Length: 197
Image (tube, rainbow, N blue to C red; front, side):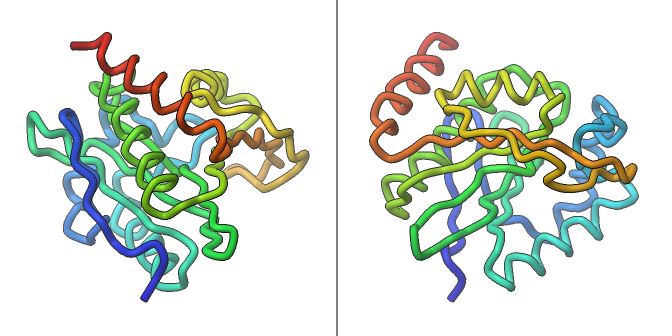
């Protein structure tokens, strides 16, 4: 049995469901909104790569390293993005939340805040994680600001940590929220969502 076990997380704006091959067509359409795969500092799959990207994530799931989700917009019932538990360590336990992307139409809406709140709540309160990590390209300022708005702290920068799709070396910013910080972060995220009502 892989850890963490498959689960569906439901909120007011979004539903996170285990990623499946039949999400490929809708997610290939979603990624066209904003042409997200063209952003050089991200690793968002192109429409023609979506089925293979899902298959790859499901293989990583079978190996125990990932737990991928499709993000369903509750209002439309449509898949609008992907997110994942990654770098899963059941011994600590700890996870990274990453590989996240949303179609442009739902970016900077309550949907992302709610998805992070659901994933963090499940990680800390059900999986009993000691910390949750976030990673992003040092030059991805939009992602860095979004992670910092969650309340995550910068742990450091890993120099030449990995290669981007174009072969360049990437410096990776590592952030985390630790279990002692979770109650304050939870209150902050709930307050952010309340302000949108």
